Length: 184
Length: 216
Image (cartoon, chains in turn cyan, yellow):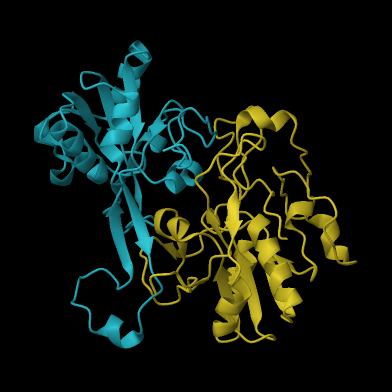
């Protein structure tokens, strides 16, 4: 089954409407490794510690920021459902510029994150900057959340991601593909 | 000067050939990091079974499963202290009952000689543990697979903590090094997550003890 707008989760949708499953992404890359670029936009910590497709380049799109937790009164006063005080996501202000350093607007770029949400935002940012062939790898590296309450893995991202459909991945670091902020 | 050259993230298949691999009888652990020379080790028999990079001056060791059992038996006395980075808490997950007190942060500058992104120690680690624990509390100090945990235990021991255990297999455990295995290079052998102990990704600020930043 080819991945189309009809079967991607809402939070994975992009303005370009181009989608691939992890399996399709790998096959596209394998068929034309010189012209198909896999771009992992997760944080360097996820790329280094959780692991990554070995051919993927890392340019982070957003960073989580952790501040010392505010006092308990401030925590108690936060609106129901709001993220905990002191924890925010901050965009990488140089994301598009950093991508432009290594890729051209008509390159084929397959964008990967944890489960397709952040990647959708990154695809939209690149589309706005004039990139035209940017695909979202739906389900991302980890996959969809397990929704089965009976499963011991309920609430964890484990289904259909890059790392659990049998595609090659690892934690081996290639400095040419790494995001190194001393060089930015 | 604390050395974090334990090469915590050196799991490249390419490096398997030269990394000393120490088989450990009792708990079946292997180490994938070079041992640190000149580190003090306690004259404790328990050390003999623990890879050099995971040994501590106190010589107290548990597996993740044992740490969980000890906490379950005495939740008021035993504290699980997870010393990894906030990003690991968020993206890898952490034990539901753990105090989260990072001992080091990830750097983003490639070290070409060591072929890694080194971790940077956080100087106020001990002071942050002292905010939440007393010197005779039983502490189960946990990291990813026992390297940073050893470092943290040694710092705590120096500050007078006596019952700080290193959780030798940590949150994620050791990497499978069997060249025949399809899981080679992956962390599927042991550790908190692989042992069926409860954990979550849901980051709440309770029990998160971070260093002060300029913005505070």
